[in-house]
Length: 417
Image 1 (cartoon, rainbow, N blue to C red):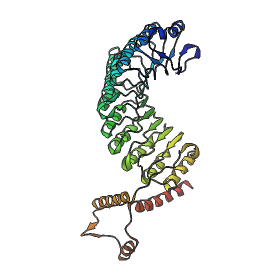
Image 2 (cartoon, rainbow, N blue to C red):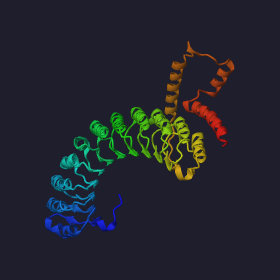
Image 3 (cartoon, helix red, strand yellow):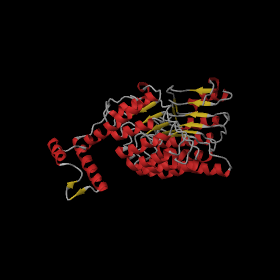
Image 4 (cartoon, rainbow, N blue to C red):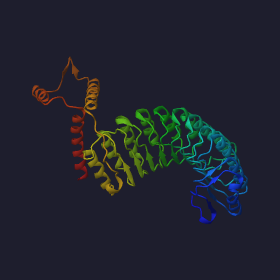
């Protein structure tokens, strides 16, 4: 939201310690005198309960206010004092009909703070943007916030209008799996979300799957950021299914989410239908060579891609798959140097992982094809078996590299690369 400078009042980053009504009085005079105030920036100061109550009284008169930027305003304050301050401030904000954005990030108010602002979130049906990053909410606080959003949606329905909330930022809050079902219910009820950022919350696969199923009911979603939570196969499968419903998606950030080999492949294969994508972060997800090659295929349809992060996965930076990714970016008239991020920290499979994967692949292949009878493999000549025995057993990586090399060669021929 763009607001002209003359309609903004700012004490941003001044490091003021405003404990009493007397401390804050000079600034409240300036706020009171500021006509047509649309944005208030008080971040980077510390406000006590008495000062907050005085501030609330002035806020009640600022009916034109649209944006309240109040992150990092309770440094060194006790939790009970913070709760009292939030009750006063939110009690005033709920009366402001034009308020559309509230930023209370970087205030360590925890569950008590969530309880203090629940009334505001339940009643203010016009709120469009809510920023609650790094508040120490925990499971209880997160559940309180999510339940308040559900109550607000019900109030909107009662008033015969769509919910207004389209952006939720709620990262670094230790939400974990315990709050996921309620957030999922809130997301499903809202159906208006366009941007959701919930990184670094310690959410495990079951919780991630629930969140994504809730988000899948938001067809206008353009930004999803779940970085540094844990997906594995079940979370990845839920994401792959939901991607088909987000026809406007522009940013997907699931870096450091442990998608895994099979989960990563599910996700990258599902990307091919999301032609609106501009930014993709798949870093540190244990995606292997087959997943990278599948991604290359999906990239054919992503003509407006601006950023692709793949660092920290399990294939070499000089692999055939990376060659294919670069070739397809070029085919799409995109410069890979501008789009493809660094591959300086790629992970290698250990020998134990190679052998383990090889045993699993062999077992799966035998079960699927039924070609092992009494311990002898059909379809191979005596000479072939002797050659294999002399060369030693192949690992899964050996087999995969051979198969992918053939496939890459065919694809490069098709692309005239």
